[in-house]
Length: 178
Image (cartoon, rainbow, N blue to C red; front, side, top):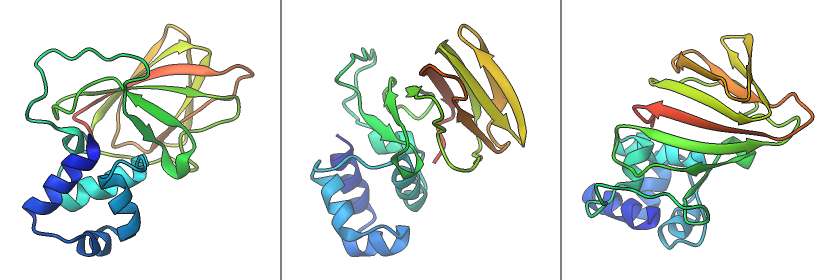
């Protein structure tokens, strides 16, 4: 559970909730709710926390007792919220720090974020259904069902569904970004 891992990382650094809140710009109340499993943190929150600990987002999910073989089942996956809670990514991989695979569905007109953003990784997006516009450094790239696009995530990017149907896609990121 992410709350247990967050509590463990915070304790290792000897931080109180208020100190971590001040360091991340998040509220102590919200951090407490995440630690207790009352609320799911957004992807933006996870990135702030990972940055504060000098870790990847995947490290926030690390569990030393994690199995060597990982079976991901629908309904049992952790959910990462995009910026401002616009969409949710289902986390398909365990937090081993090497690779992260996420599944998402964008409804018509939705985007993963209001503005493109970048991080130090390589990203591959595979469209399973529908069509996706991948904005890379101000240029649009149309990716249809069955197609994949791989790019350097240091280039500012975002995903947009400009079609009339929902778009289902997978995103692989290596290494996972903070």
